Image (cartoon, rainbow, N blue to C red; front, top):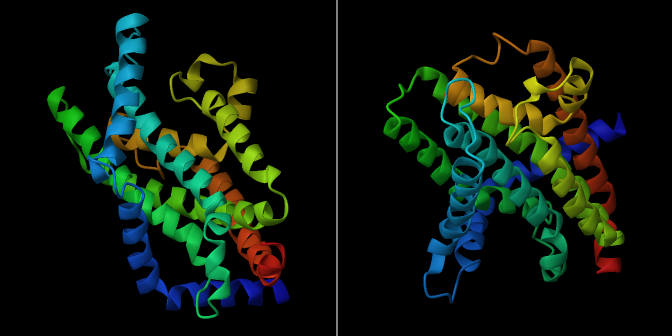
Length: 270
């Protein structure tokens, strides 16, 4: 009961500072590239170049075949775009408190805002690549349906999962710096076991079911169902949907409670 009260108070505190969170997110996005010649363009150049390289390797080099009768590069984009967002947010949010430790001295500042700021800052680039996917669909002469709007449901799901994870990791890394390295290693492992460049359908059922236990699988497949397969999330994988939200809900509450409990001790360590 005390944990639930702590969780609700923490969420109410952050909600009351929502305007400040938005302003800090805008500032964070701008300051990342402050002083460079191209400025904020670098935010879009880096992932764009990476995607072009992947396209060249898999489409031109390996001559990858179409997936589900759709061009491989489009199929791949629908998987790598949510992964970019998830990976970037978790890594930056994990280190957000350590990187802004000077803010602990400001009594009016709620340190719990920092992971949220990092996630909102990354949304700018993510929206850009969602737009790129729409453009690619049109260039390939494929129809855009209402199912594409479902991507915002999966984006909400990703943000909810990220909030819980980032509150958990950003608070633990203050006391155990190795958490930052563990998160980086976990993301590298998750990148290859998540069906971004390959389809889970090629696996035997017993291994495919193990892959589906990864919550990011739900997000990656959700983006593909929105843009490619044109399937509503309640029409298929409803068991997987229940599983995802059960796991995400536990992580969200756990992350908020752990963060709230450890927050008074941050200043002593930093």
